[in-house]
Length: 187
Image (cartoon, rainbow, N blue to C red; front, side, top):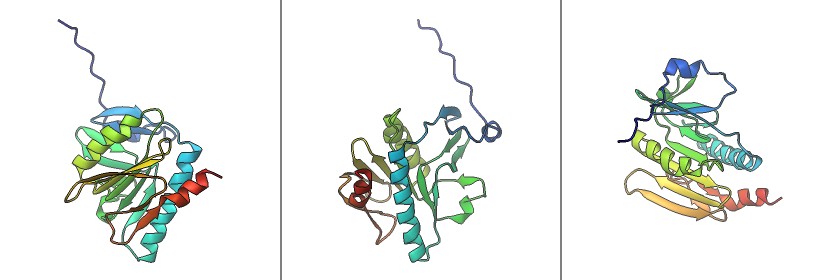
């Protein structure tokens, strides 16, 4: 018979908010996880996507807001689950309390972590789908691929190359041309 493995200690919201601000951490089912610092490519892609999304929402006089990391999203209280998506759109202003988004954003983009790629493809996809995120993109700079998960209606899970123009499904007329972003990475 195998020995019982010690269970990691779970963290509360109060303990999480008391962590030093410079520490980037996420919590899944009460367990604290370190986050890696972003790379230059990560930040370049993130900036281009942020500007594209923000400009679209402004042009349309939209009521949604775009937030880059680090900005907390509390998906669950018990057990505590808090994530810091690389980029998100929140359309329900009642979810925002000045400190975090309480509940699922409408749209999330994550850049694949070189340290732990399965985190974005498996763990986060599971949590985002089950907690009500409408659309989740996984941008993989190493493979130069984007995986689009659209969790409403007929579930979509489609892969695109960095040379593609991709529709943001939560909007009728928003398309992101990744070849423009890809060109910046080659300079």
